[in-house]
Length: 376
Image (cartoon, rainbow, N blue to C red; front, side, top):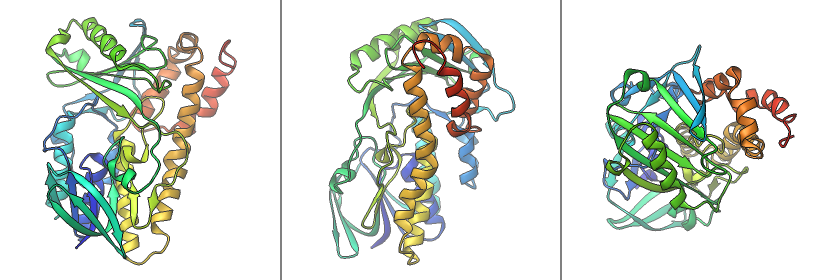
């Protein structure tokens, strides 16, 4: 019998496992993929995550980004040198995720990879979790198994609509200048955008339809290939993967009887810039706190988790969703009169680095955008 069973060993699941195990609770993490596994993701991480952990992430940080270059339809560039921020981290997800789960194992968590969950039922006060490796029992259950969460479906909890996204990992030489620069392109992808993050020995290109649930994936591949060619890279040498993103859309219930949703299973991805790692880890940390409270007998611990996520990240991401709605009404005008302005570029960079929230900048941004013809 485990104090908690966690399904999914991504940033949310591993963060929850680390904090639970650190408090000497028995934890089992079940992951359907064999670790370390490849993961379709840009790999940009806000250094703000460090405040939630007591270990050093530098072994898996490949480089640090202190500049941002914006383009519209791969032209009309605007470059911003970020000021007064801790540079954003660039990581390879297979290394980063494996590092995280190793930290949890080091605290005493048990980890089973290559194991798929096939069923889950609450028997009295005990979760019976059926897997391809047998049945396991736990007092509490955390679903951290991604955008199309199997466990959320088994729990009968609603899944929000996902949007199409993809990534293209291309090897190549990265100049010193590019190693410190993140790239964002608007306008090429209708109702979406693309971004490029440099790594030690190549680039991670990503694209997502943040305002178009019906967006076609074949368009993503076409535009990502063209984007890579802009960097004088041979896209045919890259690895292309498609994946859904579960964007935050509205406040939702993230708990049921002795169970919680975390990470993309909770629909916690930023609806404006697609950031998912930091909010996922935040939900993992908070989910662990909730389970620890419940194990101590706190009657409202799980309900308080839902309230906490909705009030903190939910409110903030609702502002991001509103700004995305304004921006994509007239993206060219919004880009020219909004993103290209040095102040706006700095604000977006600080949000990426975790040093500003949408709630802090939304009112000012709205005042600027609402008077733009076609948007207001």
